[in-house]
Image (cartoon, rainbow, N blue to C red; front, side, top):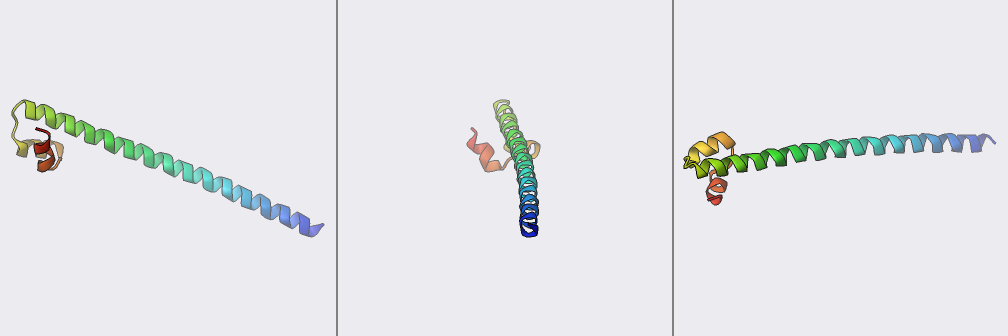
Length: 78
């Protein structure tokens, strides 16, 4: 009887720990996904700005300073 109660308690502790671990992992994954999405969106915006600046005849050096994009990448947009 006592052994059965101990086994049940251990199982409950394990299941609780597993559930908390899963929730924490999902939360971390969600945060990572949001951060990755923000970075991707920011990069796409920088590329869009660079294209617009190129269309206006702006210098690659200035575009690099404004957007932070590598000069080679800006040149490749032309």
